[in-house]
Image (cartoon, rainbow, N blue to C red; front, top):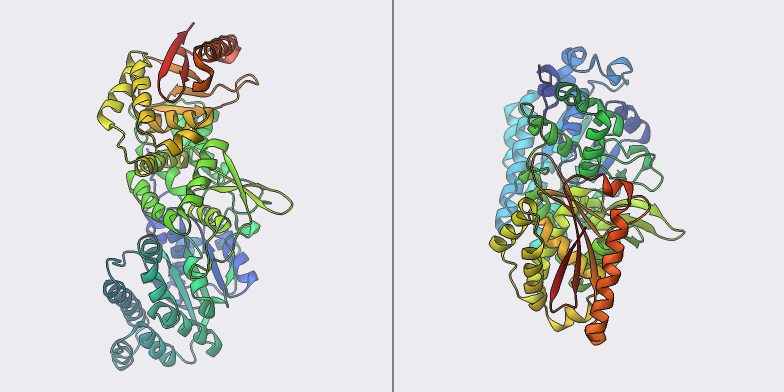
Length: 564
């Protein structure tokens, strides 16, 4: 019997009572209580935030006391409950799905979200109709909240807010002025959150837990949120959301057993695709994106024991592409250079920012820190003064190269031809011929502006090749992977479920035009010798169906030489 995978399910009760696989994060409940009453925890999109919030809702809700053993009895918190279990009336709000087409739409749908949450709360806890009518008759969101807080005097409420910034991130990427209008002084969103601060002072709002992706909106609402402890880059909460190595391995074990797969091989592949997130330099381990792991297991083809055709769910990819609109904030050239460095150098350094002041400035440190909150980079270490950031995994690298294609087209006013590129990749995989892809490379290079040509070197040529290859990811693409202490430029490795007839090793060389024919020939011979050396390495020689190539260019012409 296949295990039930809760991919896309964020209702805690449904997961537990219907027998879905559940990774127990309930130990963090006691940790949260020990740290205080008001908390914010940011994590990238699709990282298990909503299920975590639902878990808290079911744990603290006074009306679910009779369900406690059924829901939590087998979990850590069921064995070690806290004194606050089932002791609150819980007000739950979530702000995804808010229309962002205009200021009017944002206001209208935000107001509806607040109204619905308050209505459901008062109905659930059987408040008199007169109180409900009084609260819901108010016009503005902050007025409804003020009336609600006044009516709750003497009560102690737990407020859970999920995806607090979902709509704000969409607005910020498209319309900075609109963002500042609704979040700034006098804006209706800021006014709403200021009421929450008042509610903490009166004692009505006894506990608060907020999730989101970035602190951009938090820091626009400082006067409303300076009561909350931001745990987002607290080492103790590094694995509160997402899966650890052990948790992921336990979920994958049934697949390995059913398909007689090597657990270590399966884990290595899933690690390469979905692991790599670290939210504090001193965190003990990196974390897997939980939704991506669940997607993989749910869409694994058990009949043929093959991986999903697409290793990243299109719904998740769409979320990330929308967030990429935030790349337009600040200086676009500075941001582009950060992306260029990440792709070409693999790492960037910056002073990690806990707060952003969009209306005052937004510099390179802010941009890189924002990428980290969004999950596009992760903490890889630190220097004495700065934090090091790197691309976390193959999924995000793939998204970068898809975005890089768009950026290349926009900057150089050209269009990379998808149809002929697809045909070239197919010839590469099935016929083992690199020449059609070299033709596509040459066509793109000839369309570059003089400005970009001046900056091109060997690493940028490799970036262009990778950009083309990543548009049709039928291979597992490895750049400068260590093989017997050597580093071939590009390895194209067969990956499940695609059946290719050829794997490839490609070495790139850049010949300066000023060096003429002699320089071209010298670079060619140097590259051929290098590839021949790679072919002598035991791990390269053991690769089945391998073709080895030299790709040589001076930014005008591209020549390929098959070796071995």
